Each structure stands twice: as structure tokens, then as C-alpha cells.
Amino acid sequence: MSYLAVDFSPVASANDIIRETTSEYVCIVSGNVIVPANWLNEMLSVILSDRSSGEVMALGNSGTSMAAPMPAGCTLNTMDWFSRTKGRPGALAFYLDKSACVLIEKNCFRERSYLDEGYKTLAWALLDVSVASFNESPRARLADTVYVYRFPDDIAAEIDHDRTRLLSKPGSRNSLKALRQHNVQQLSPLLNQLALDQRLSPLTTARETYRILRSHFRRREYLGIVKAALVGLARLPTGSTAIASKKFTSRMVSPNKLRVTYVLHNIAVAGGVISAVQLANELVLLGIEVRVVALYQYAETEAWKWYTQPIIFKDANDLISNFPESDIAVATHWTTANWVAAVVRNGAARSSAYFLQDYESWFFPESDKRSRNAVLETYSKINNRIVKSSWLQELIRKDGFSSNKITLGLDLATYYPRDVPKPLATTIVAMARPGTPRRGFSNLVDALTLIKTEYPSTRIILFGEDISDQDIPFEYEGVGVISSSDKMAELYSRATIFIDASDFQGFGRTAIEAMACNVACILTDVGGVSEYAESYENCILVPPKNPHAICQAFGKIDSDIDLYKRILKNGIATAKRFCHKREAMETAAFFKTLG
Image (tube, rainbow, N blue to C red):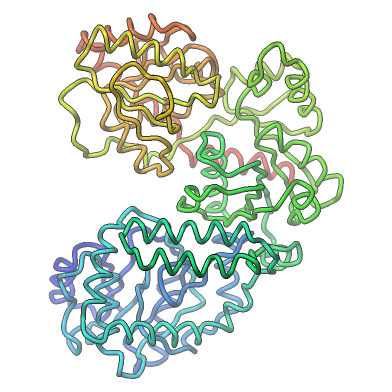
């Protein structure tokens, strides 16, 4: 049995490959998909069991009418286990939709002609074939014992183009609606098993309405804005939100798996949150049942890769009372340590760990001894502590507590030099976060003012927060919060120099990201950057709160081409030492000693 795997490449190229191949089957798999073990054999068995069906699709998490979204508290492992134990492969007849993973007999292309090359994505070109032949009986089958996960990618413009093209064809709107109604009806018995409990939550309805309004506004669909606003107002008094109850999470878990739950305060675009989510995802890929729980999730984080769907509780008491049964509960911030200690006392978790990502007592001024002591007191609440730098480990030791060092890792498949246009002028990219005092915003502004005065042609790009209300005495480009790691890598790649003026760092994640993207770094010399930073080798280190030192470092890099090239070369080599998969394997090994 031969087959041809085709990524989501240009439609014309796919047609050329399909015409020329001698393979009996064509397998089209999206480039942003994770597939489980034995997926292809499962799909082949479905298509061979019913030769009248020329197409078979895998069950997936999004984008189609055959989607079974991961409920809160479920992981890729959960959904793979669920589909294998609850699915009925090939029992359901469907119309082909934008499947992330589809196996098609080559003869189907001959019968229906090849794909419309006016589309920009294969997914929509395939959907067009199904819509055009809607009056035929369904030929596709669902391999619902195969669950594939499609993570988000940045192809909004292509999708908008393809949607417009499909809907412009005569009769396509009605056919598409009927096609999807049929598919959802067929899938509903399986979806019912994944349904969460509901509770009254007008705030959730308001947030959902806001996201719909924002989507219509971006597409300039003004009638859609009015309709969405009216629907949202009507739903507000009775709005509800799906919640993952303790009963549901205890049922929806792969048997004989280590269960680890990371506890975040809020899921926001912040270095510590990004590190925790990245680690949770990699632990899922290692076969651990990892959950992430929090009190709130910001909308911009919902488009992240989530290999485990987070559970959002309404408050701390709700979190403690309904905490999913776990082998290990992990605190990720000092504000979550008491919650973790409570769930262990209540028996919801057998053991606990403290993922210490910074020296958090220094988040408060020396005069605020009460807050500093509150942070330090949390160290005794949890016996197993993990730090990501020797600097942080030493400070914890001085406070009288031991810890295990597992150095932070970076996804080098995301952070690498991107092929983006570089400005002709020397360009500085810097993190500007006036809302977080330890990030040294005022010192950064003073340093950039000096640089702009001495080197007026320098371009400056600031990210991190909306700083439009700040008094900044030079011309700059403010890009605000960047929630996409791909967009962040593109921004680094536009830069000549990256500057971090923080008073201290638990590790200095942004600097490693910039190094990986081939950017020269100027960093302050206090904190976890000592784990990797070597002044005049892979960066230039300066004292904190010293704008003149930053300006002088900029001048040296800008004027010494040999120094600049050395810093770039060594920076990329340094970043390659910090792999996120290594971090996950070390963390998994540590957890197994606790669980």
C-alpha cells in the first residue's frame, strides 16, 4: 500500500504532485498538526473497510464541522485515549470539510477534476470540492479513533481570501450550511460525551461578544457588528460558561499516567506564564497528563499552542474546592503557593512542587517588609522547589531553603533568524514595561534618549505594553503587547540590537530569544543572565540603573564590526544550548521521583 504525504503547500503544486504520483492514495496533512501514533494505519483501515468511500478524515480539535474541541482539563493524551476507546471508526458518513488530516483515493480527483488553483490553501480547495458535489451522497468517513491536534498559525489573510472565494460561487452558502449541519448531527453523540457542566456567567458572554465584535470590525462587516451586539445583549442575562468539574476531570484522563497540574494566577502575556505553558506542552508530549489552572485568561493567550486546555476558576476558593485530582500540584508564583499547599492538605494532590521563576520578594521595595516577608514565607509551604538559574538558587539557599536547578529552555523551532526586511538604519528593539518597575522603564527611556541624541539615525522599536500615554522624548515605534511567539521572533529579526534595562532577572528569557534570532544584546548584569551572558563575547553587560553605560555599550557595538559579528555568532551558539525539550525531560524525571 503506497501513499503520498502532501503538506499544505500551494494548490497548484499539490495538483502537480497528485497528477504525477503513481500512489493509490493521497494523504494531505496540515503542516501545523500533531498526529498520534499509528494514525495512518487507522485511516487506511477505515478506507479499506468501505471501498465506496473514497475519503477518510481524522477527528480534530478545530476548523471543521467534524471538530471535537479539547474541553477544559483535557490534553492531547486525553483526546487520543478518548477517541481510541470511544470512537467507532468509519461508522459515520460525512461530507469532506477543511480537515487537517485527510486520506483520499486518487481516483476521486479524476472523477471530480482537480483542485481549484484560485485558492491559497489546500484546506479550502478541498472544501470547495465537497460543496460543489454536495448533492451527491456523502463519500467521506470519519476515523474517529484518530485525534489530531491543529495548533494556530498566522494565515488569516489567506483564510479570508479563500472564504470569500468559496462563498462567491452560486449556491455555495446553502450547500455549506447544509453540509455542516449534517456533519454536526452525525458527530453529536460523541460530542455529548465531551460536554462540560454549565454555570451562569454574564461576564463570559460579554467577553465572547467582544471577540465576535472585534472579528467583524477587522473585516469591516458592519452589519455583523450590529447583529452580534444585539445577540450578545439578549444572551447577557442568561449567559453561561462551560466548567470542568472535578467529576469530569477525574473521568477524562488517560489511565496509568502521571497527573501534574500547574497553578497560575492569570494566564497573561508574561515571561513566567509563557515559560510555564511551554513546559506544560512539552510534558504532554512526553506522555504526562498535565493540566493548567488559573483564575483568568486574557483573550490574546487563547491563540497560543495549548496541548492541554486550561481550566479557569472564578476565584481561589473555587480553585481549591474543585481542583482536579493530581499526583503533583505545581505553584508558579508566590501568590499561588498557598493555594497549592491547600489542595495538598485537602487531598486533591498527593505532592507539590514550587516552580520559582524569579526572586519575587524583590518585586516589592525594601520599605515594604510585610510583602517581602509574605513571599519568603511561601518557601516553607512547599518542600520541592525548582529554580532555573544558579543565581536564584543561591538566593533561595541564603534564605534557608534547598532547590533543584533545571535551566530554562527555548523553542528553537520558533526563535530563529526570520527572513524579514531589515531597516537600513541601526535598529534597537527593547522591552518597555512601565507597569512593572523592576523592568527599568525610566532608565531605558533615559538611555535611549542619550542614544538618539548621539546617534540620531537610530530606529527604536518598543514592545511589552501600550505606552502611548507615556512621555517619551524621542521618535519610536510602539508595538505594544505581542502575544504570538512567531511575531516576536519576526520583531527580533528586524533588530540590530536588543536592550533589556531590567534591575534584575530570574533568567532573562527575552535575551535568549533575541540571541537565537541573531540580535546583539545589551543586558544588565544582575540576576539569572549570569547563566549564559558573557560580556563582549555573546552580549555586553552593563550595571543596572545606568543609562550612560547602555549608551556607551551601544556605541561600541555600532562602531566595532568585529565585536558585533562575534556577539552575533556566539549569541546563536549560546541559545542553542538552552533547549526546551531538554528542560521538559529533566522536569519529567524530577516529577517522577515525587509522583
